[in-house]
Image (cartoon, rainbow, N blue to C red; front, side, top):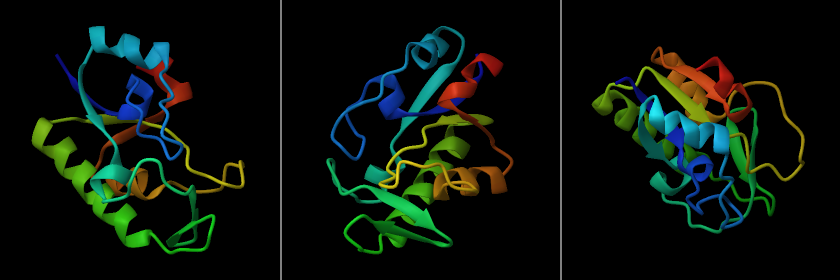
Amino acid sequence: MDKLLVSACLLGTPCRYDGKSKADAHVQALMGKYEIVPVCPEQLGGLPTPRVPSERRGERVVTADGRDVTEAYRRGAEAALALCQQNGCEAAVLIYDGTFSRRLTEGDGVTAEALKAHGITIYGESDVEKL
């Protein structure tokens, strides 16, 4: 069975910035097709749950109250990449969340960027039908 790295909040783990999950039935249904490796890069990077929402601004990640949390996001991305590689995952389903502007911005999040740079295919929660 193929392995798939998946944002833990999509599986029902309450690890989002607001302390809630974003359980998605379509993503959860992947458990019958793939061996799932859950991940929360923000927690792996040392950020608490709940936490102040953050968004990417160029190369930096900044909270709604102005704190720079870039290094925590980078640590989390490195840990997510290590999990992906250790488990032989060739793809990941990641959530886009943590924004305080409530708008999608151009480009990838820190974790998606790190995984893509190492050949991991990224799917958003709205792309799971492609799997």
